[in-house]
Length: 347
Image 1: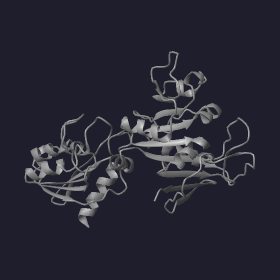
Image 2 (image 1 turned 135 degrees about the vertical axis):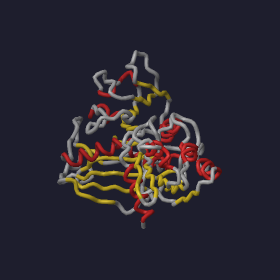
Image 3 (image 1 turned 45 degrees about the vertical axis):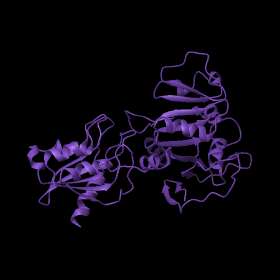
Image 4 (image 1 turned 90 degrees about the vertical axis):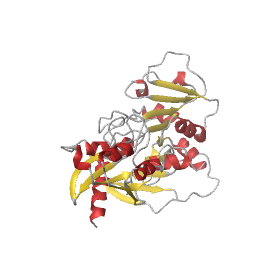
């Protein structure tokens, strides 16, 4: 029970790291004689890892000698933006390390544990992560980003009214929740119709992020994108998946990726090649149908507004048919003001 308490403290600390980009969220608690000496976490991509953050809080590093460290993820074993944490724990004389889960990244997996054991440190692996780093774990298991489809719809399953104007469906609480969902993504993708009708910013407006999601759009010809598009405003990196290259000078943060026939699989592979672990497909209806048709929807988040748009309005995920029925887990359902939030993952 006592060990569980310390590990839960480490999990809670890990969740405080909200700008770790492609690094995992990690928390660490240093304990000696049943007294908590320090609590640390990975604050931001490129900064100290959780173990080093905890050690840095000690008045005297000698306090770590003989202590036990509870850490949510296997201590790293390699030199990257920071030195290896496993070696540092050995240097300061930690006697035991309790680890939530092994790091799925192949450059670490098992190597951090091996360093600790080689220095006589007792290691216990709990085999649990308390829901931390879902996309990080998925990426190294499947070698591609975790893909989430998100949309808002009316009670009759429509995402936009008939015509070429954006229809606002949800209220403030659901809109704020959608922003939080964006903040947990490394890339956000929309199709050309959504880009034209909505002119979205695809930014996280509820918080300031050092590493905001990459904004991406699938278009036929990038040179036909309206120069007033918010995606050209330099507020974040933007990728255009285009059939043709640009003949114009584009803003510095804009990147054009060219293929005569972009498919969901090709785009997902491009994100994977760049190390992107989570992708949010926000629209439109046809693009989401394309992802569903090839089983590239790992998670679905739907906001249902208590309104009707009628028969001529645009339905959700219309287009490419499914080759087989797609099954998802029993959804989690919650109320956000007058709107309903539904979330589920592929079985």
